[in-house]
Image 1 (cartoon, one colour):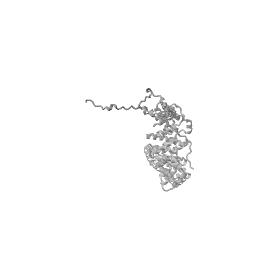
Image 2: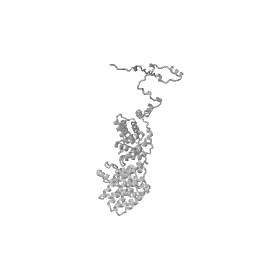
Image 3: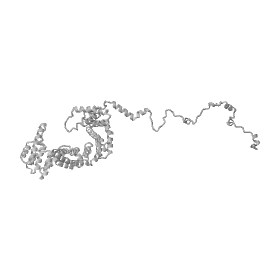
Image 4: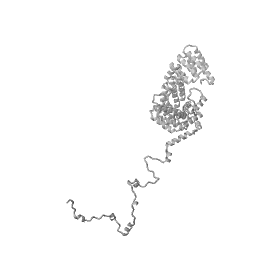
Length: 529
């Protein structure tokens, strides 16, 4: 009762037979094939390969590429052989090493000196020769181991303008061996001032043209302007890195405003390099519209003398420069400082407050008219206007050197005979101011014949205007007419009183002084034709 009842039929059922894997495998029906399969030996337990999981990636990797194949990379990494050829830093290092080892210059100085004329010592305002010991001291400083001494010597040799063979050779050798960029620039600048425009020198100056400092660019342009002007006058073909220099100067002109000093200096250098450069020509024409008289005069000189450009605009600006250039303020300043009473005795005086030579602009304007010539002036229908301006400047101009430049322009333009005719006719005018102007014109142009000379002597005795008579005395002394008739007339008037007598005394002293100088220098006195 306490045990469960088990059905009797449970023990009578037979258990199913276990299936073998071998019966489930397909076997070939052919007896021969079955025998061949049975003859294949079965692997034992120790012959089964030991496989570890996870398996390595090489199991699924494609076949390895050939050895010569280079897998592409994001950053190209050349092999060591090509790396040695392409490394710019390695090239720069090797170049510096070879430069330091190179003590002697490869620059053919003898060939250069045959092409370049030795520059005169323009820095001196007096006629004084440089002491040879001083020059040797500067060359010694240039080879010194102290960089400050080298810097001082490089600046001094450049400013002295000594374009001698030993000076240029010493500067160039030091330039090749120095590693200080400041010293390298100063030597390159001095070499440029001396006329040496070798490739390495020009490249250093080009590098400093790109300097962010304005004073450094202006200093470099000043040296280039002097050297390129001398180069254009000498008409030499050799100049180093010319295309690169032209390109950088054009970039400098386009970089800033047209009326800036740096732009104007760069355009001036471009004009010396290539007179047909359109950028330089455009800048010069733009400067003609400025109120800066100095810059306008420099632009006119560049357009006429260097670029050979002449039109009505240029001629009108030259006449304006000749008439209205602000010289009067400088003259008044000079009179106050030096107490100069006779303005006709002033020739060339430098005034620091004005910043330029007093007579430079007006005299240069008269010279430009001479360079242009009568034919070009006639082509622009400006002959009468030019003649009237030159005629007025003969007596209106207070400075003698400008009057002389005007007289030379009148002679170059073949207007002298016409001016003579007008002035001689004005001597007989009723207006004393007209007669005075005519006498002043003859004092510059000279006396054409003996008839006019004796007529002036007669006017000295009989003219009713004392101002006219005083002007005749000044004319005789200015022309250096030291003959018997003039001396007799002056001595007679010296016995009188007043301004005329004192002027005759001054004239006699001037004639005596001129006579002594003419005898010493064996110069013939002024003679009437």
